[in-house]
Length: 123
Image 1 (cartoon, rainbow, N blue to C red):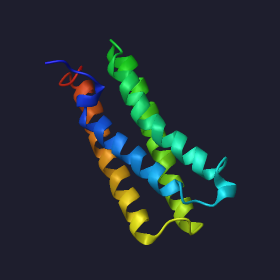
Image 2: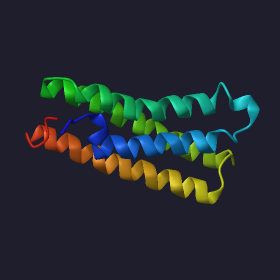
Image 3: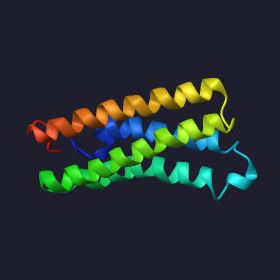
Image 4: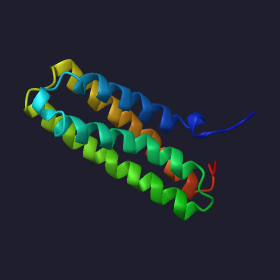
């Protein structure tokens, strides 16, 4: 069996979150194209991209550094969800869906990091 970052549940959840972010931000006002929409999308992409990049790092410290960057981007997205809600760019259902998705991603990413710290998941 070939292993890749795509086998990591945290990456799978992050990827699903990215797709959701792109889906909802396409309906943001046009004047936000290079503002909030772009920032939100880039932060969401950063979550899964840093999981993928960290996956191939050989040392625990390197892996955890990339996963910590993912965690920072995840928190940035939490902020963008609240901001988007408060600016009334999201419907209530979209806000809830985004919050559930980012929370689920966070739980799996934290678990994966804890596994690496405790030597249970090096790949």
